[in-house]
Image (cartoon, rainbow, N blue to C red):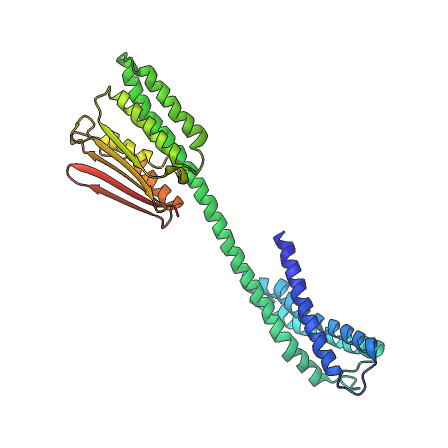
Amino acid sequence: MKRKLVIYLHIAIWSLMLLSDIWSSYSRNLTTPDRAAGILSFAKIVIIQTGYIAIPIFCFYFAYYFVAPQLFVARKYFKAILLFLLTIVGAVVLRYSMEYFFFLPVLGFDNYRGHPWPAQDFIENVFWYYFPKYFIYGLMYFFAESWYKTKQLQQELQKEKSTAELAFLRSQLNPHFLFNTLNDIYSLTYQKSDQAPEAVLKLSELLRYMLREGTEDFMPLVQEIQYLETLIKLQLISAKGNAYVQMDADGAFGEYTVASLLFVSFVENAFKHGVLNDPSNPVSIKLVTGDGNISFSVTNKKNQGQKDKTGGIGLNNVRRRLELMYPDRHQLKIVDDEDHYNVNLLLKTA
């Protein structure tokens, strides 16, 4: 479709140039004393100008299809010079053939006033008027088109790379979360806890969301909040009620979408490295929307006895997803002091 559009555009441009030349020539012809009457004179002008426009068309496309690829792509400069000279010869031969094998014998039109071979005037006319302008246009068009195609290809490759990378990041997220949660449920079943069946049920709800809805790039914010609430309930079950987590959500959530499974890594990190059993320092999760922005924060008291200092893949994962899905539209600030760990994320969705 794009190729056809380009072809139509070329035809339109050359047609406009031809119409302009015809009108200009016909206007001049109205003042000449030897013009033919009516339609005959105009018909001759149309035929003559159609013949003349073949020369710039030849120069333009010969430069585009033959000279430019050797010059800009293959870098075969000697071959490009030979083709350059061939273009000059071709333009001269084309002009001469039209003048002395068609215009003069068929139409009786003698542009050079009876000279059998006005070599100097003839060649200069072709070389200085037709050749340099349209030949250079052909080179410039090839260069501009090649630059545009290269730029477009780079953008497509970058888009494909980003899509593949997002899919990879998402595939990392699910097994990572599943591994941690299954450990908690294993602990409940090992202890023969009555809450083990409910924990399995909550896990199935989370998996259903991750496998069905969570595979999309963006999801309604309402569903992400429900996902976090289920995640918190599962954590409370795993902790046997000995965990304090406070989640506050405020705003008109229905009109917002967010990158799927974006907040889970921050919440999971708080559960993994934070103190959960201190009622005076609960894990605090806040989500506020307004003015086209989504503000999300997680604060937890640090577990000083936590020996696992590695952040896992979760936080690095979410940083990279933010770069890909919210370029220049997010602010992530993490404060890691001696006692507390605080994450503040601002997403600009509008």
